[in-house]
Length: 181
Image (cartoon, rainbow, N blue to C red; front, side, top):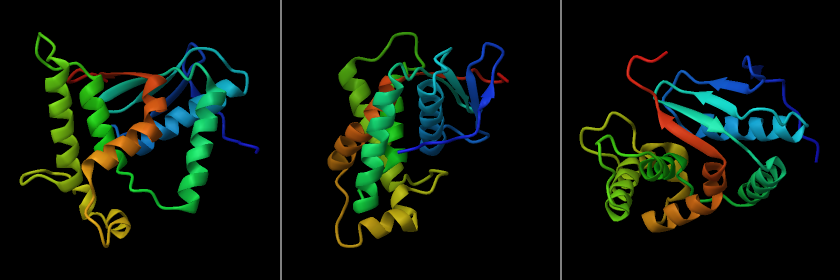
């Protein structure tokens, strides 16, 4: 397999830099992770990559770029053969709720964070009464996967964990401060 990409924008320290004008989403995160892995696999094992979104800053370490790329290619092949019931936004909401510390001064216990993460994932999947975002099940491409069955959040989160956990093992994420540029 031969993979190619254009040279990414580089910061002053030689690190690849990626930016999105939209809140952190699965597409920007996966794209920056894969591009960083490709850049590092090509022999440019300098500083970690960075993804800047209006709401988060992500450090993309990709310490083992070959492992990252093999994982991605394995899942791309599987997705090409069979549509998977993946809900990247709901899993991303779940993973972010677990990865980021709470906004209070004392961190919540793990079981409280797990409960909150699950509630946020369900809200992303099914929508909330006053939510601004379209729920994932409100999108035609997602509905097509579940014409005859009701999605099971546990199955969605378990599969998202298998597919996307290696990505979260390669990154460090933090919220951006209000007003930061």
